[in-house]
Length: 101
Image (cartoon, rainbow, N blue to C red; front, side, top):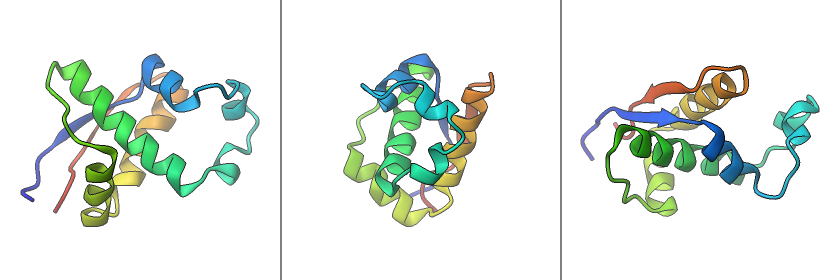
């Protein structure tokens, strides 16, 4: 897969999709990272890429499994998505990532 830059975004819609029925204080209790699963991390990557494409007005056709394959090819992708997620939690919402190698 040829490397390309993809916009990541984690705003209110992404946060709502990620949290689902969990209360917002799930993020505010200071223990969120301790209780986060690898599946949570992969969902954050997928949602951030999906929302980045939506905000950029671009189609997003990647399945969750394809995004997981991208993580296999670029193990730093979850860290990049988490940086966007953390920025979102502190007021900023945008970032970039380079999926693939």
